[in-house]
Image 1 (cartoon, protein in one colour):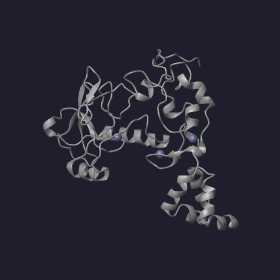
Image 2 (tube, protein in one colour):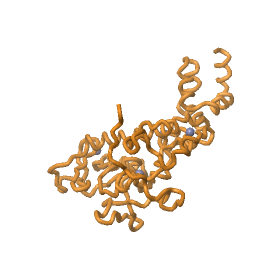
Image 3 (cartoon, protein in one colour):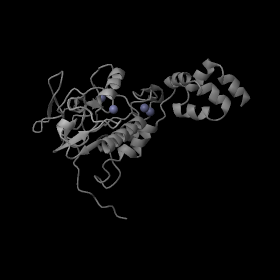
Image 4 (cartoon, protein in one colour):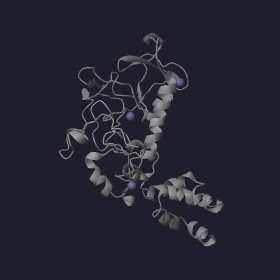
Length: 288
Ligand SMILES: [Zn+2]
Ligand SMILES: [Zn+2]
Ligand SMILES: [Zn+2]
Ligand SMILES: [Zn+2]
């Protein structure tokens, strides 16, 4: 152990070792004893630099192949766990490209193409296949956050006045960070938005399917009626105030005309992707 610590205390050797470990393995190595902790984890900058060269840990692809978590969305379609049926043969032959990872936009840990979170097949219209976080074909309110004037000013400084460009199909995010995003959205909508008797004069009210939903800042203060509408994923301002036009699924955007909520270039412009999703059947009762 002493020799190992002596070797790893030389940064070049430490970096060389990190190239053969995933970030999670590196983290566990650091927790093995206080000397290794000092070398690997004590400086956040060193750990960050090491995780830039470390391997993808393969957990994203494992989740896809075992239909776990987000990849177990439609268990009743075929009477067995299922998710990416259209490309199932490919999923089971896929290998984690451990050296080919790129940093996750949220945590910076390297994740490969097969392991990153991205929907790879089209769900039925009106369900999950939406390109933008807030632009929903069914006009429902999701992934939106609104702040009071004081909090919004801080967020505006952090996001430097930029507009949301989130595209669920092109952004690079690991599965763990995707879970955190969903948790944050559930937490915010549960605790800081309400259906009810809130009028627009009181503050921010936005349409949600056939209802109105009042929004509150996480600090508890009601955001102003014409305050900024922000993306819960990136916290930047939305391009739209209206998400969709109820009939046409088309939203007017602040800067580039209109956008069709159902249009997904990754699917619509790719002749190899089946244009008709596999049909959702009624629930199949499994024999016990
Ligand atoms: Zn991978
Ligand atoms: Zn991440
Ligand atoms: Zn606030
Ligand atoms: Zn965004």
